[in-house]
Length: 180
Image (cartoon, rainbow, N blue to C red; front, top):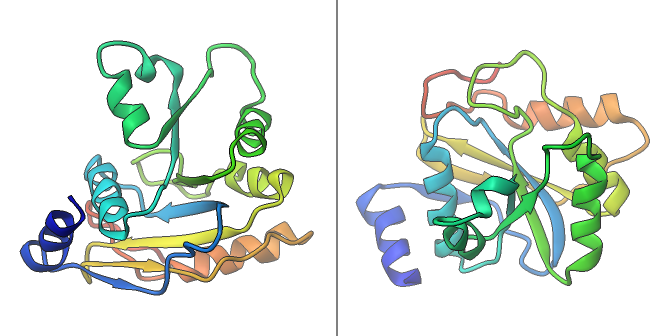
């Protein structure tokens, strides 16, 4: 499956990868930007197979019920109950503490629509779980997936957020909206 994924990603689709996936780390948060299309999920699954690495994501609990729950678990999903007034950050931090390996990919935008400001849940998750953040750019303009070095969040959230957003400057999503 990895060879087929490699062929599709590099040869058929003509995409490249920049940077190194931190395979030596068992736990971290990947922030994937921009999230403009449902195609991003498929691209993420393809990248996961190309790398042959375990990468997880979270989804609402109902996605993990029949008939498709097996698919979401098989592709690395972890269910989160958002129906009650649960503390989602704490629930995810709990998943980090329960698993030996958990690499959480999520979009800080929180939606495929254009947003002015990112949600900060990823930052709080990384701080409370004491894990680094890896930035991953899905640049459809350059047909490139780019990985940053892992970075531990500091006590200076505003400074960290400026660095994170700067990493994605000029990156174009599937739906053409470059990050400025």
